[in-house]
Length: 96
Image (cartoon, rainbow, N blue to C red; front, side):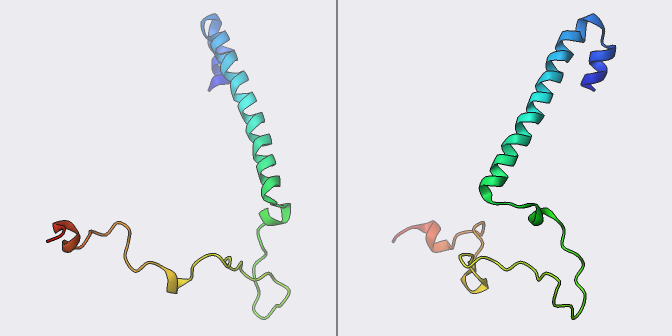
């Protein structure tokens, strides 16, 4: 859309569309390099981004599904009450 304004917009829109085009290109450039630096900082490798092959029954060489981290709570530690549930009537009425 911006390139069509740049090419076909005439003299009125030319500099506006040029500024938008330059801004978009610099934004793409900086986003790619910022994302790459963050991915390297997090230790993400190319192998992490490749989809695992379909798992065949009885084939020990295929990858197993990822396990949860040790710090993640299991079902026994999950809250039994939703944080969006309404408070009980004793909490509303207050003391006394």
